[in-house]
Length: 637
Image (cartoon, rainbow, N blue to C red; front, side):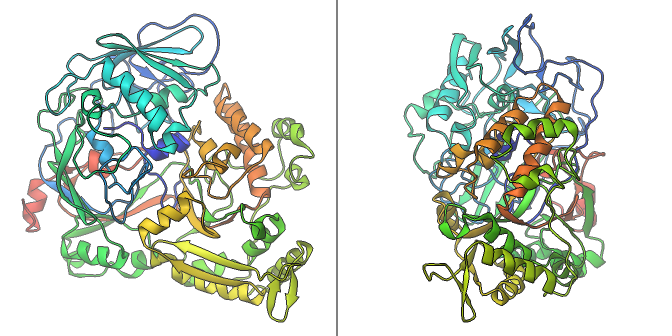
């Protein structure tokens, strides 16, 4: 999906980083030119003629005659390589290992960046909140009722074997993904009713009339698969056979579970299109997989990896003092991350009886001393996360506005009464690591929830002890959980940090077989269909969904629909704030921390255009190899 959508986009309608277990995301930044585009919200009136782009609320920055995106250098040289560990992933992808190259289904663990092998109808502009412009589709026409989107395809589009990419392939792909794709796809696009062939280079996509304003854009960002290839290859099965793609890269060398290389397709049919000019510059992208972050860091210091985004505060504060840094061969840099921070925290599996009472969940959360943790373990680098829409206009603050109250009043009696007052915010501790006031409040809540003391242990009325297992697939959180577990022990709660291998971890998440797990939900400036995957009742019952907490509330379901069906950004923001208040009052998580920046290090052999795009940080597709810099530090290829 060269510049299309990944799992994060599908789930949150955002810009490309998916579900990272450690770090955050930041503030929404929106600036668009007065040039009018084509909105996608439902409504009546005249249809539109063929257009070169789509956006949620109508504005497009780039006119139909644009030559390249502003954040790309159209004269960037091609060549060289970048080696890195994947900081984000999509669908069934796993950043620690892989055993299949089939990435669009639930089965197996695929390597991140497989989407680079596939083209999409349209691609995201990363300097606009949600706009998309044509790749395989030269133009799109929308019916008056906004339920039929007709895409005119570029006849020059080709798969890597030279076969033409036609409407047959597009229609086949969309229906296959709807019926047999990863749950992140099938659940998100269920209001896409059909995709059909009008002629060789025209495909019609029909929606139910219930779709949100984002769904047509999401569909336009899905991968186009070869019908001929998948008619003889089982789409649902795991395989290490490289798939036939059409994108700017193809699979190169594969060392299953350890490394994969993506090779630039020199004669890629779309290389000179405005949406591609200046992108996909490296001849080779090499992804290496490590189960231990420390081992990956050592590989970076040796130059085996050439780019690293740092997700561990201790390493960032103390680890970057080695010869290559001192010699100026490795650059340590901080880039702004202007996206909404989203929600990072430890999420309770409320499907389990012991976590069914919100007072129990709140009490467990009160035992986490962020102030002590930030000072003693994080070197003061983070801020506390409070909101599911942290660092955006959608974050609720103070008491509800008049407009928020109008929405919330619809659910009075279905939501906690505190929703109508000051928004719930994690209290600030005294920083001692054992704040007696907060622990007393936690104890009171546990007693109210029906837990009783049996010696030093907290037990239910049936005598079952209250235990909490923090499930993780890497050791990085261990040093954070241990002091937290000590605080929980003072309340009579037995808390353990459970480390499992990545395959078992993903399997347990897919089947909701855990107590508590850490997750970062990356959100976007324009939330869409995908937030149903995070918080809706339907997703709570769907194995493999991202509703890890098992949130199931008619009021939350209704507010989600208010957000994704809003007819203006103002209405969307009001609905999101109301939703944020209800989610926070439910105590479904122990909120973690965030920072509004990308902390990275790289060997000084790269170039990039400035300013970087505000809505994503895809260095592997926007930076380039600088031969002169590489020669200067003795790292020429």
